[in-house]
Length: 242
Length: 222
Image (cartoon, rainbow over all chains, first blue to last red; front, side, top):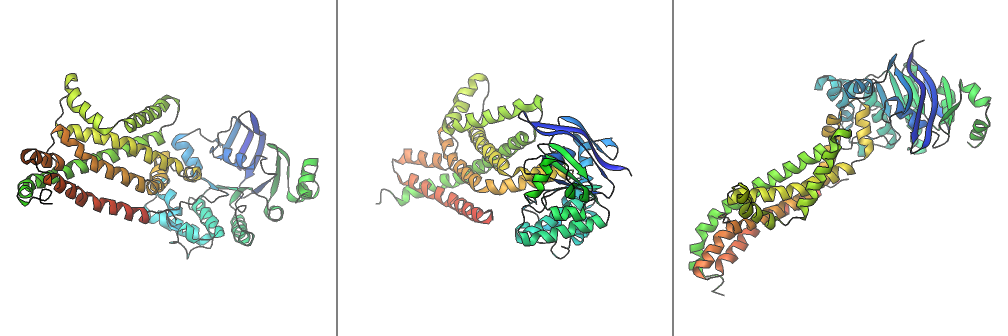
């Protein structure tokens, strides 16, 4: 199986403090890999290094067999095919749901306005918000906002979705709606790399789970192996505190 | 009372003041438009430059903004009109006033736009860039529209101040409202033309002040 995304020895240091150390991780086509670990363990930094929102200072990120370009239109083109979903949604507050999802298809992928709106509408329907296309972000619940953010990424037909704690900012009763969408994307074969604190979700939905602590992947494998037979003390104590 | 509202003096002063209204409005509108455009242009350049070779440009823009916010517009005006000819730069009174008011408003407008741009959440840039938008498109479609909402109230205030400062042009013989009134006042030794001029200024700028108030509520961030 060919990997969509592969990190080879990726490292990042912030002000002398290592945030990521020698990360090796691959995500195959239609594979869902969950990143778990304590706050500050480097999950967000790892995701942000994939599309170079954070610039890694060691190692390579390889997307569809090619190193992710350092900048310019080549990097923009890779970012378009690597959707990102943020913990805080980051919807554009001055645009409605449809405009949020249609902006990049129109202005980054160069579709016509009509084609861009069609792609946006289909993406919103896919996350169950086909009836809220004209709603402004502040008229939507947190769960709906995050689903619009997922639709914004999906409208570009990405090869992989990077999800940075997509449910951590949500009220508990809204988490389910977002996880349902992620599960249905998984059934459709969308490759995903997701940082999450939802261990039950990771167990049931992930093909593999990687456990991060202090910027290192300490364990990586199928959920049953990682969650039920933890080999390291760090993971044992992390799981026991949940 | 009659000395302040002498009908004969007012009748003599009115044609000049009426023609001055056109000059005042012309100077106000052109210098406001130029100042806002200059401020937006500089703030945009400052927001989009990146990389070491261009970094000093941002510093230069900030320095311009600081110097011209510290400069009294009247001082800049008399320098441009009375001192610049010695450097071979001859400006008409109108041009000198236009340049002085435009430069001073441009400095304030740059800072106002810059403050608006930097107060837009970093996550907005990141979301836009993560979808493959260029920095230019991210700025234009995502960051600037949000920044402009924040800048409208302070910018309106600065624009009104610039409009009122057109009265400074009277010292370089621009035949605007105050200059016209002052020349009739000098001829007649009557204060009536000055009071008429004061009324004209209020009539001209009160609607702008009201517009500013309306814009403030209209663009209030929810």
